[in-house]
Amino acid sequence: MEPIDIIKKFYQPGTKSYATLVHHSEQVTQKALTVAAKVPHLEPDLDFIAEAAMLHDIGIHATVAESLGCHGRHPYLLHGTLGRKMLDGLDLPRHALVCERHVGIGISAADIVTHNLPLPIRDMRPVSIEEQIIGSADKFFSKNGNGNGREKTVGEILAEIESYGSDKVIRFKSWLELFAA
Ligand SMILES: [Fe+2]
Image (cartoon, rainbow, N blue to C red; front, side, top):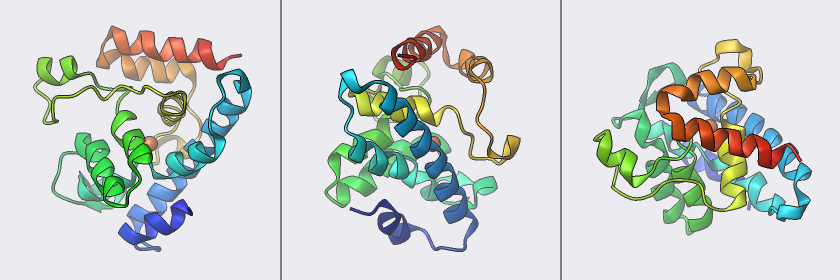
């Protein structure tokens, strides 16, 4: 499977949304593969990571994110569940779960209820090692062009996710430990 061919089913090459998505996804894929190479004892599926990391944000075009060239009608928060639907529709359920589970740093059913989020109430936290690697790698790169696409520092990421709740900070720190091997 060539992820770029799947992206082209939904995004027109030459558009801002295509360029933004492909650039960000390539950065996340490289980072995820670098992390995966450090943890052979966890037996990450490298081929799957290369595909799923390229596709993790495929749902953005259906959201309202003008700065990314996305002119959909859904809140940006829904890009994970929208991406899941798109990939489920292509019979890629394992890749689809990566879409759903990478948002934020993984959203729990309790988060959805407590914060009254416009999401179906189910656990959306990363489970498999591949989901955790991609979810972690994604945090190192923004899509909005700030910082010229450079990799964020761990300190910058921690400052950002502090507002998501202390459990998210703990989860990210546990990933740093797990992937520092
Ligand atoms: Fe992303």
